[in-house]
Image 1 (cartoon, one colour):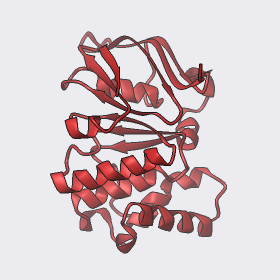
Image 2 (image 1 turned 90 degrees about the vertical axis):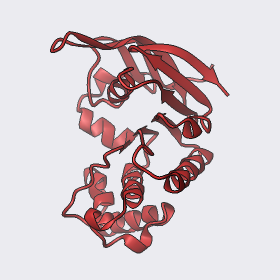
Image 3 (image 1 turned 180 degrees about the vertical axis):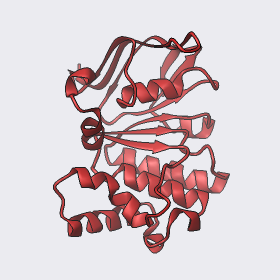
Image 4 (image 1 turned 30 degrees about the horizontal axis):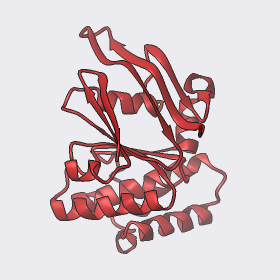
Length: 224
């Protein structure tokens, strides 16, 4: 059996404040190269689970492994994320005082790349997402769809093994969302592993597998 890139083993997340169990005994595996959609109603625990998988939060029960290694053993979570993961958030989290090119370079400051190499890598990624002509614009000068493209380029900056995206098309019109769909298809075609949280049925239908959550539990795991 192929060694999983990501493995959740009876993972739970309980919040004392509010007495809420957001994730309850969730188990699944994702192997390298898979394209997985995580779906479910609002409040089902999808985003909480994504944050756990990405090391933005820690489980109160169970174990998360990345490439066979317990996530808790990686030490500095920020270093793990910058070297292994790419995050795409619905709210983009772009730095308003920086240009598109500068925003894309931000994760690269955790690497040994020179300033010239950072600029070149950022230019290549903006070209990949169709934003090279907007490289010198700050986020407030960009449309919602353009900001999402820059956020995706930034997520790819350090060539992550796994791309995590939380409602990446939630704020986009249908035409712009379709271009993001095709971009994810292209990344998957190049061998990238993707895990996307989405309410968008059209996006979920493009994935290899669909994980469905309800009330913090994994309800189903269906391959296409």
